[in-house]
Amino acid sequence: MKVLYLDAPEEIIRERRRKGLDRYDELWEGVYHMVSPPSERHQYIVGELFGLLGVYAQSHKLGTLRLGLGVRAGEENYRIPEWIFLRTGRETLLKPDSGTVDEGPDAVLEVRSPGDETDEKIPFYEKRAVRELIIVDRDTRAVAVFCHTAGHFRPVSPNAAGWIYSEALRAFFRTDVAGPRLLLLLEFDRSEHSV
Image 1 (tube, rainbow, N blue to C red):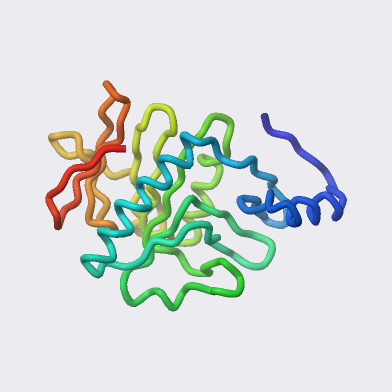
Image 2 (cartoon, rainbow, N blue to C red):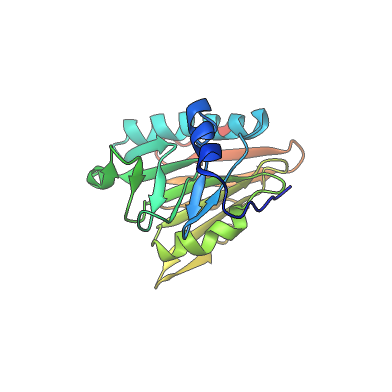
């Protein structure tokens, strides 16, 4: 359920911060979006992908994955994806004191859950020149990868075997609807995993 709270009192926002409930809250052009904590199933997908791809990216010196960092377009406009990926040499974009990056990361992951704002975030990531946007549906494990080309996102088409390639992560994704499961094929390891 979405709730619009016009002119939320500052004490509500302070209380959310004090209790640690603001971890996923975002500012959309000055409008404060209070985001509910993710479900266990949502967190499972995020954690499994972070663990698998984080170790893979590090062992092959591809770059680094970071949880909970925001993608920012000024002080009053940021989104917080599940995690971001920065290829080797771009770690300097990390702003440790602010918990954000100002320039588009090489990849971001969003896990779509019922009633969330994943789809509404797509234009923001496109404007911030995020190289790849990976969206996984929490319930169906359906996956979509969008590649930033000439200022716009375009969906990456699956190959003949149904795999969708992430050039940034050097990994293939596919949905096994029988599970449902998300399958990953890591290009350099040639190893397959499921989430």
